[in-house]
Image 1 (cartoon, chains in turn red, blue):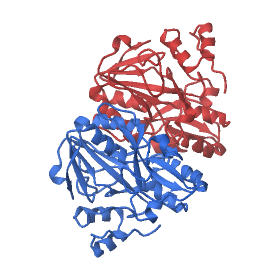
Image 2: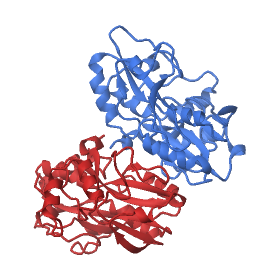
Image 3: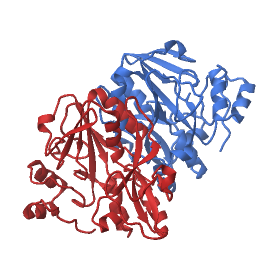
Image 4: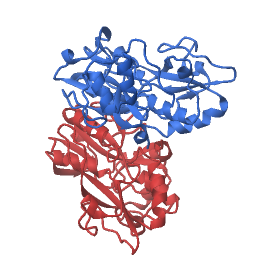
Length: 276
Length: 276
């Protein structure tokens, strides 16, 4: 797999430590405050994860929402109320410190972006650790399928579609989908490879016509960056892990913590264990 | 697939209607009180489902338990609080009347067995509709693998193992597994076929040694009936949908409703849609 590129604001010695780190070593470096940048490409083979933290008061609705919408909301772990540590997807893992960067929301509004959430932690919080498309992208790359956003050094394109998620209590919203342009002869392979990883988004939601899912302008994604689509390429859309964040923000719970975009948790779970 | 055998207490004209019924027609017959017997073999190709109904007070713990233990607790649908109707796995479906028979539990004790639960319904109840091994058994049979319990006209053998489920709040317990004896040359095929249906128990939990999972006496299952194991056959164990019922009973919530063993809900969901 291609070596990731050092983010500009990162100390070279920290970066070289990270490139050789196991997941637990990477979490320790991040916990110590040495790294606050995106985690794409770090610890290849290990699943990275999105985060949403909600008060117990909203946790049932969100847990039910995830149960009803497993493709955009693949739960790797839900922590016990008030616990900062994970038990299943990683050990020696502190939810409040081991993501490089966090966002704090109040009633759906972003109120702060911080390096750890120790001072924001409360005894009534439940953490939802959610799978991320890095898990299937690495398999697609292994199979020789170009990830255009990687080639172009950009974030993947993500669109707010007109596809309704199945609501649950106070939680509702449209599905966000990520798009990767593929040559027609790669589409079947990409469906099969991603479809074999149902625990992290699974097979695509849509192939071919952006308008059919309410995407009016493919050149202007709502999240991430636009990427080049070459003549003859087919846009392929997958359910995206930004959906739960978008839904939580749409549903305006009094308090929520999320990771900052791209700044994921590096878990001990191997991508291969997310199959079947 | 083999035609099911008419239960002895069933009216022949009701039975012949059931054999030709669509799922919704079968539910109507059951709703009208015409049928109170096991549903095995009815509406082939459509998923049947187990039921646990709990007060909202216990619903978060059980939903989290199911999230942490998807192999024994594959959720087909979780209803909104107080709603008797399903929306996803079937339409025109009343949870309180469309199972042939129900059990009422108080603090883990069986207090009644009834034909419908209309008089027991409360506004704070949440229904968990849980997948059932009939869904993968029909695929195994199609592939030419004998289901010994069917051949012998018995219920499948189910064992309370020493394998702990991952607890969630007030819910905890050991995993129940069903066992099917297979000839060695069928084991790989059975793993592949059931593994391709992760939404209903998926691949086996254990192959070969009953003692390794705490099964002391294969001839005396805790649930269901013993079946013959021929010389050279291998016992293959799958996570069983009786686990959640057993866990709920172990955890002793103040009130719970379940279906009676074998008396399942016939859903509109095709088994084939439970793949991937």
